[in-house]
Length: 178
Image (cartoon, rainbow, N blue to C red; front, side, top):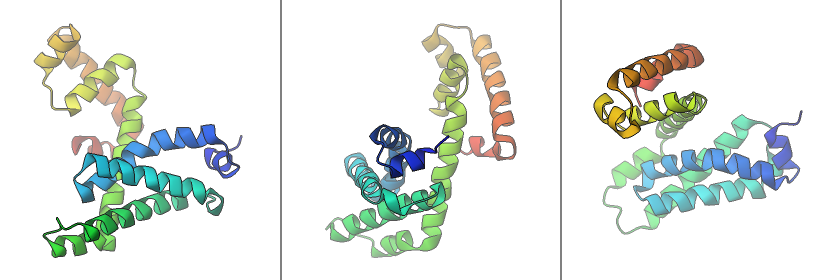
């Protein structure tokens, strides 16, 4: 079975579309940490993915693709900030240019992706309740919104967290930080 990266490397647009849909929201979130603009972040994320498509033949593994996407996205964001007259704090820009900021932000994004993937694999009702919980909605409001009892919400949430604990194993604590 060929990997998605091999398919992309051979020019398979459907595989790239699947890859794009998976990584676009992650890169948007990453860019937003720099730009604080949804529209600009979306543009940068899209540009980074297009650059990957244009250079797809240069990559053989997911790690190198991810590194390329994060570094490209970061560099585009920094270039936008440098060109912007809104940039009041040059010290903040220096912090963002640092490798430690990139690594920390990269880990945040990878963690987010890992947890989101685990949540997406939950059964529909469990996924729905966990997503509402992560938005900060409390059990009584979830019950009202989904037209179920509060006890059903609690039980479903408990079962969902149990499954997430199993899937994420030693990384379960990451869910608490979201």
